[in-house]
Image (cartoon, rainbow, N blue to C red; front, top):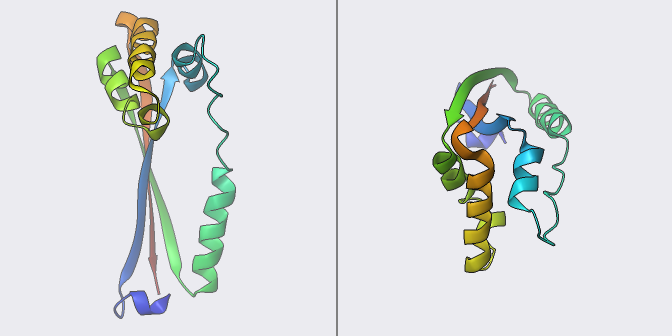
Length: 128
């Protein structure tokens, strides 16, 4: 792993996740999948466990690291949320007529209320 970096170089791992807070992810999933035999969203592996594995690997390889997190509150209109949600593979793999139905159900559920969310941005900066 050391060969990846120039002397005194840094490795940055950066990602973000947008999490709806009102309505909840479960409520949005239920609305999108109403009257559908499509399975519910698969549970994701424990994020804390995955992060620990990365941190353990960095330590084993001799890296010192710092973790930065920024949480930004967001608000989406129904159209904005539906457009964003429609870019995920679980939506894109649906037949075209089902994609339209899911979009319509989701937009109707959200209505004029919109979606409140948090953008959780993470950065792990490692150096030798």
